[in-house]
Length: 317
Image (cartoon, rainbow, N blue to C red):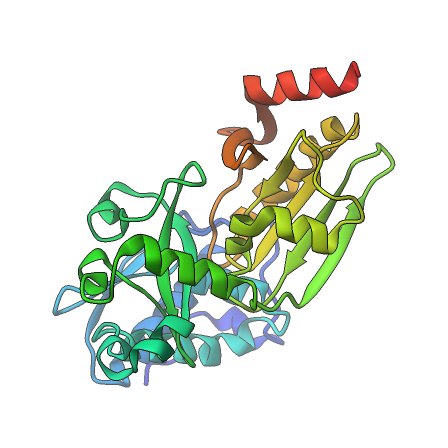
């Protein structure tokens, strides 16, 4: 076992201050914290007899498997226990990764009905390298891919187009997955309000499919908001897989709420595991349109023409 390369972590295991140099890949970690995290990752694989190359943002194994470190880095960053918990978090994460390396074995082991009962739609960021394997779903939310995933006791396996070929027709499988969404547990519901009149609802939970509830947005709004969806639609944000924020559009509060949601989405996207999108979308007529996002400078809100038209119409009404 390699020793602790960074002595500062012996002093009460406190986090490094914001004044110390930031890591180039994970800005929410200091250079020292990120270096420790990468050492822990390499050690966790080595303890299981697997030699890996640890790069800034990913791990590569000798057989050519690639695993990103973004989610793990965010999990460690958000753990209130500080760096003393990182070794356990890394060990658990690497264990799950290794158990999933052979692919979705459950596709061959589970009875068909049980498999269908554990099928859910899941959003992932849209990247060119993912399109061949995961580009089979509908283009529902801009910038995201909608894929089918199998919810297993220890892992969530995203299913490729090839692995789905023997299960049935994609549309029917998606319909069943969306139906299963109605049973997804939401652990917390809160309403965020400010003095400027902004307000929006936030749903969070341990499930990987909380953000997927955007596919049932009208039902979600009826369940959690006091007002049923208006003809003007709903603003929605999906910062990461464990969270969904929405605002039922009905009056002039849409303008401050849109700005508040954009800041909320950008912050959640930057610092949470399973990051999805820093944008805010407008759900109307059954479709999603991007209406606000952060720019290269940071949290400055950039409104699209659709957002400006919407707010002008309601503010003048």
